Amino acid sequence: MTESDTGELHETPLADVHRALGARIVEFAGWLMPVQYRGIIEEHRAVRERAGLFDLSHMGELFVEGPQAANGLAAALVSDPRTLAVGRAHYSMICATDGGVIDDLIVYRLAEERFLVVANAGNSQAVSDALAERLAGSRAVLDDRALATALVAVQGPASAGILGPLTDVDLGRLRYYAIAEGAVAGIPALVARTGYTGEDGFEVFVEWDQARPIWDALAAAGETAGLMPVGLGARDTLRLEAGMPLYGNELDRTTNPYEAGLGRVVKLDKGVEFVGRAALEKAARDGVGRRLVGLVVRGRGIARHGYPVWAGDRRTGAVTSGAPSPTLGSPIAMAYVAPRDAEPGTILDVEIRDGRVPAEVVALPFYRRPA
Amino acid sequence: MVPPDLRYTKDHEWVRLDGDEATIGITAYAADQLGDIVFVELPDAGRTVEQFAAFGVVESVKAVSDLFAPVSGEVVEANGTLSAQPELVNQEPFGSGWMIRLRVSDTAQLDDLLDAAAYDALVAAG
Image 1 (tube, chains in turn purple, blue):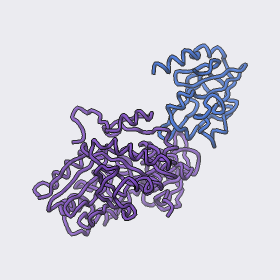
Image 2 (cartoon, one colour):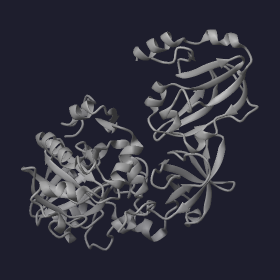
Image 3 (cartoon, chains in turn green, cyan):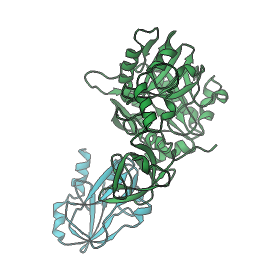
């Protein structure tokens, strides 16, 4: 399972590598992880311009297989994995009966009756427990391999050129949100064209004890292309620019997918009962009391998590995530605001210490990679 | 290690005294701990600052940190270049990354601060 009862911190197999690279290590979701190596802005730019190498071994990998795997997941999640072709993936969520989000996930179909569900590190245990409960009594089998599976990602425009020569997977035929089984540097791996940066990139799943050889092979292969190790700090600024939610900020047990603008992920008409359906149908029908928006700060100051947001004299919400944007050059943020204030172009004010700084509502994402 | 002619606070500010005018900034250690500095908020000229009270804010990508005055005085000038180039604090924390200049009310307040050796020892102790 993912977290020890004593609350011990986990290390990935690459912990020594990060230390040797001089990484600043922080505690994150029960793991000691690199937040930065050379600097967040430099690492962020490396991913946008060339490629970055990420250790994501703290994430949870839950395999679901058997004759009722697809049906079981369709009943457990808000999406419909039955519609996934083999080798394809989609973004999903697992909700509670009241419609609150337990975690956001990527679901990959590896075979007709074999799926990989990837959960956030901090929710891996909760997702594992919920799936075990929801699949109980069916012929679907859950295999929680969170601590047995390492994950290394290469993200950025140079990614395919770096990974291609190392793998027998034909990257030219691996579409966005697809996954293939093969080898990387001779090591058995799942190669997925998914990521959390808004760039082209690949997530490579291997057995836990193969993390080091995979990392070393990718680092060596990427050297001439300017591949750089990238920590969780830049991972956060990259996903923010790409308009992607972070569980714990934009999503939590008190948010439903519709408030977060993720109603399209919920397949209300999939024709099978699923956990949270009644509550989510109600939310879809009645509308939501708040909406997630993007904000670009137009004055001087950085909007950050928790800062109040004002519409004139009326308090309308709060910032969920905020940071400087190396790509845009202005600070950006996501915030929940009243639906009447959610129209792109609306000028709101973010309360930053004693003052209020204007910020413009914009449609997400802030950044889209060049076609 | 750190410039020998300056004085230091336990919160990693430095001060250089020139007659009754003090130049103030943060040390290389502080800048390094913060990471990439992206925003600096400084008081306007004419504001009074009190020794060891907060006079502004320095922000990195991930964190917000108060700045504490090593000595009391009246702000003569804030470093306007940091508005467009906050990274100067990382690049030259003791030079072009300076933050404010004060007219010092009591130069004896420097005796309350750490000298270079004491500051180096503080940093070495972690």
